Image (cartoon, rainbow over all chains, first blue to last red):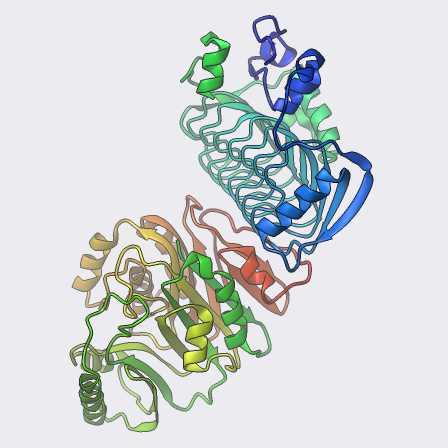
Length: 284
Length: 313
C-alpha cells in the first residue's frame, strides 16, 4: 500500500476545493509507486502486449462465455481485443483489472465494462444502464448514447459518452471524470461524493441532488438544482482542466468553456479530509 | 421487474405477432410468470372482436383456485345468452383454451353498457374489444403463449407486449398485462414499474363509474387514461396528465387502433430503449429486445425523464 501520509496531497485540484481524493485504482497506485509494485500482487491481472491483436465474435456466446474468452485471450498476452457482434448483451467486458485496448464493434446492454481497473475501452455503439459501474481506472469512450446510471459509483478514470446519457449519471460517484457530449437526464450527480462530471448539453431536473462533494460542469440548460447543489464561479483552473479533459475526450471543440455553469455541494455533509487514510478508505 | 416491448410499422404491415414474440422472449428473464400481447391485426374492420375469459389457467405456477372445467361451459352459455339479449349476434366463435374465447360480433351501441352486462356474469372478464385489437395474455413465456394461441402468423401494423414478474398481485391471467382501456375499443396498456397512489386513484375513478377487474396497480394506467379520454382528452393529453396524476415509478406503453405511445415517469426510474426510423419504431425495457428483430447495428437511445411520445401507423 502506498504511503498516504507522505504523499503529496495538495494538488492543484485540491487547492480549488474540487477534488481531494488521492487514491484511485490499484493499477494507478502501482503505476505511481514502483517500489510498492514489486511487492504487490493483483489477482486476476495479466501482462498483455498492445501490439498483439485479435478479434472475438460473441454473437453466439452468452455474457459469461464471452467474458471467459476475453480473460483467456488476455492470459495469452493479447493486448488489443476487438469484440464483434455484442448486440446489446449485458455485462460484457466486466472485471478487467489490467491494461488492455478493448474495442466493441456494436452496442452493449446493462452493466457493460463494470468494475474495471485500467483498460482503455471503445464502444462504437450505445451502452445500456450502469456502464462502467465501479470503474477504478482506465478510459472508456462511448461513441453513441448511454442509458441511465452512467458511471455509477466510479472511483477513477475517464468515462466519456459522445452522445446523450440517461438519468442519474454519476450517481454515487467517488472519483474520476465523466464527460458527456450531449444531454443528460434527471438526477445527474445524485449523491455524488468526489470527482467531476461534464455535460456539454442540457441536463434534467434535480441536478446534483444530495451531492457531498465533487464538481459538475454544464454547458446547456439546467432543469433544476437538487438539494445541496449550488452554483460556483468558474475559475481559470476550471477552464484549464476542462480544456485538457475535453481534448482527451476529443469532443467539445467549439464550446465556450467560460460560459459553462459550475455546480458544487452547498453543504458539507461529510468531512473526508479529516479522516485518517484507513478511515477514508472505509468511508468511500 | 417486468419487461415491456412495443413496435409500430409506419405505412405498412408486417408479421407483428412473430416480431413481438421474439422481443418478449428476449425479455423473459425480466418476467417469467405470464406474457401478454396486444396485437393490432389486419382485420376487415366489419365486426368487433371480443376476447374474454371464463376462468383462469390453473397450471404453470398459477395462484388461482382450481375449478371444474364444466363451470367454464356454463359461463360461456351465459355469455352467449347475454349477447343475444344485447342484440349482438355472434358472427364467428373460437374456443382458444378451456377458459378463453375469441368471438366476432356485431354491435353498434354503447360499449360501457355492453361490458358491464357481460362482466355481470361471475368470473367472466372481457380481455378486449376492438375492430383490430387482439389481446392475448396467459401464464408462461412469450413462446409458450404464442404457440398456445397461434400468434406467430398475425399480420398487423403494431403491438405491445409484457413479460410479467408478479409482485403486487397474483400469478393469474386477470393480473397479467396488457390491460384493455375499458370501455374504449382498441385501447391497450402495458406497464413496467410500481404505482404508489393506486388506491387513492382507484377509489376516485370508481366513484366516476370506471371499472377495475384486478388488484394490479398497472390496470390503473389503462383506467386513468380511459377516464381522461372519456372526458374529451386526446390520448397524448391523457398520457401527459398521467405524469403528475400517477405517483411512483413507471414506463408504460399505450396503443390504439392507429397509434402507439410511451410515457416515462419524472424520475426515469424504469428503463426504456428506443429505436426510431421512418418506417419502424421499436422499443423495449432492454436493447436485446430490439436486437431480436433488428440484429444489424442501429442507433438507439433512452427517452428522458417525463417524456411522452406518440407515433401513428
